[in-house]
Amino acid sequence: MEPIVPIAILSSLILGALIAFVAFGSYFRKRKSEVASIAKPAEAAAPNLKNSKPQQTKKSQSKPHHSHADKDLNKRHHPLDLNTLKGHGDSVNGLCFSSDGHSLATACDDGVVRVFKLDDASSKSFKFMRINLPAGGHPTAVAFVDDAYSVVVASQNLTGANLYMYGEDKPKSGDNIQQSKPEIKWEHHNVHDKKYIITLFGTKATHGAADGSTIIASSSEGTDIKLWHGKSGKLLGNVDTNQLKNNMATISPDGRFIAAAAFTADVKVWEIVYSKDSSVKEVTKVMQLKGHKSAVTWLCFTPNSEQIITASKDGSIRVWNINVRYHLDEDPKTLKSFEIPLHDSKGSVLSYDRLSVSPDGKILAATHGSLLQWLSVETGQVLETADKAHDGDITDIAWAPKPVSVGDKWLSILATASVDKKVKLWAAPAL
Image (tube, rainbow, N blue to C red):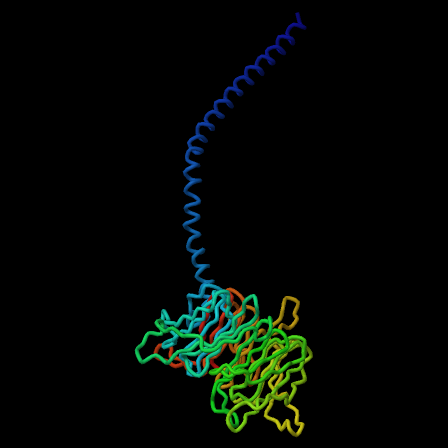
């Protein structure tokens, strides 16, 4: 009988374990069911939370999003940015102020030249005279002639570069400029063969026996530069830089010199010699600016026509004195030289695309791509920078020759044109 007792005890233990296992299994299944029943309402609420959460996130992010946009807008709105001339249908290739500073002409790839009246540079809108070029023509540059109602336009089409002079009698006081209908007074076709006109500059010639008439210099992308009489369209002279290709050419404010920036590091300067009857007698080379180590990208004369400012791919700006006795073989001298304060990601010095000096000769405006800078001519110090002055490359810049009305003030104004279809007006920075 003794062996039976342990077996009975062992059987009892196994049976008890089975009963406990079943009991605990039932308990856990019940708890699992309770947890599931609790989780279901939470899951039912989850979609509402899921739907509402993005809305809350969107709502919470809306302010930072708009704030960020506002910051970008404020960043783009430089303190010197006064106004924008809108309405251009394509890239604006060139611009020019009239001699009184009250009109601004623009040449646009949409085939239209617009002459804006700047009665107040802070206006919300500007009246303008519209000039439609002949079909197929794309205006590349523009220059005023003797008044604010006559302009010479450089146009490019499939056959080559053309020049048109549009003009009309000055409207009577009170006439609407938008109703003006200028007509072609003269025109020349294929003036530089099939080559593109890259720059067109005009000035009222006052040097020597000149009678104050407007003369215009057109430079091709080749090596030739031509001089024209603004009112009559007569060809006055023709020079060749013999430097592979021109970067640009301009004329001094007094109408005495022509200077060209070309493929090489040297700048050639020609003198326009006037006869006693005010006609152009000849255009002759008189000096060469030597000192840069690489091609000169742009240059401009100072208002007194006695100095030239150059920018080069060698990363420097130079100010030259050209008021020398060149007929006695006296060479022009470098008065100042500054490093261009622009560098790429590798630290290499960049070059400027365009230069323009203020009417008082104290501030130099310079561009690189969409960047705009103002520098002191005296020290080379950067006065102001607009890192993104336009939403695309700047194609042209010019200072108004005289102060322009801005509200109740009269300010020195710089205009910039760009591929972004806009023309902007900028105030001059403080020195």
